[in-house]
Length: 276
Image (cartoon, one colour):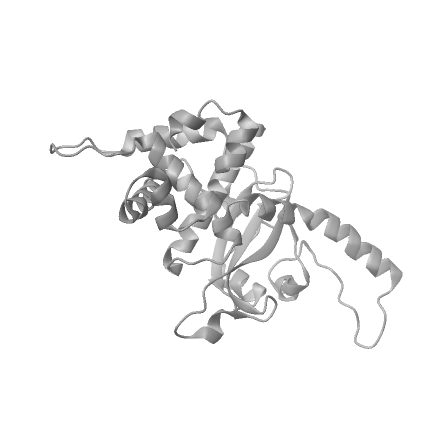
């Protein structure tokens, strides 16, 4: 398994293999080559060139096999794979090329978005040894980490993210994240954001069914129309979760989860710009 063996794959095949296009991969390698300091001391050269190191990282995100199994595929040690993945992740996020606009862009950007969709997705995790109740999600019936996405409905780009424990309510995570919208920006959310009306007037939320009474047909129709406008967030979640590290049970330490989620989201935005 080397980059030399897969670089001639067609664009759909290459994306199917590692999750990104050829052009995105070349940009990642260019960043790594620019920010990798020259080796000052002589010694044994690395078995994997920069292209292979980036490929190892993408393969880890895409397939989410253990370090041991990936090490056997590449003919290196398990510790080497771990070091490569951490080094590539840290270098890419520090470069600034693969970074989200951030929540300040919602208020101070040159052109504030007309409509944003806020949604939360959950990633299952291993059962924690301590404070298990804080991570238990009643919705998913397992221990999870929550990821909040703020998505521009028109461009489908991810503006910012926030992360929390599975037990926390979606609106609580929204408040803690500090996301605020421009008065001209229209916000779309689900039933979990009822308290959002106190913070933002230009808002559309589904109508909850009255207790013991049916929901009127007009309200049902409005809820369906709103769901059709909000489905953009579900499509974005699908694009992120082709990387199994975000869709399968997360086995690693939780402190690095936010970095990986933000980096994958930034790569999604980068490819969205290439497609545009």
